[in-house]
Image (cartoon, rainbow, N blue to C red; front, side):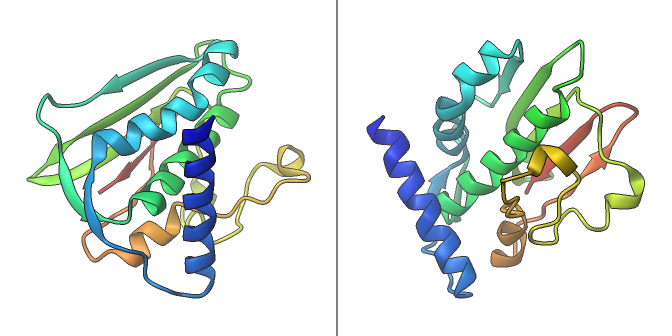
Amino acid sequence: VRSSAVAGTNLTQSLLAFSRKGVGQKRPVTLNCVVENVLRVVEKQLADEGVELVVRSPEEPLMILGDAPMLESALMNLVINARHAMLGSEAKRLTVETGLDTDKPFIRVTDTGCGIAPEYLDRVFEPFFTTKGALAAGQVDTGAAAPVSRRSRNAVLAIARTTSASAAPIR
């Protein structure tokens, strides 16, 4: 509970910094720790909903210079979006990977949900954009993943659409 409260405080501070267009503190961050912190908060709910959670990461920790709360916020947003996309799916699998792609560290989130319609791909990084319709009633979709790509020269956030799922790597 305490770690969730700390994570919530960090998330709030990051969102406030983003709204003020301030730059977060860049410090050494282990990507595996970012993944662990986020999944610790949501793994029980995912399990209760029948979502198979697959985590893949190299044995060696991947260190970057970044804003851990902002990365956690972006990853949490991607995981929540993946969960929503899988609500009507028979096979529910959420895969979170960390690794290196041409020597650049990444976190990749892949799900077996309905995917993102091609007409929305250009808009998914707009703050407050949502395709959730009634699902978003009473919720605010902050587009929290977008600030990561704007805040870091080395961060790339991309959405890839496959036939029935979406993959969102943070690089």
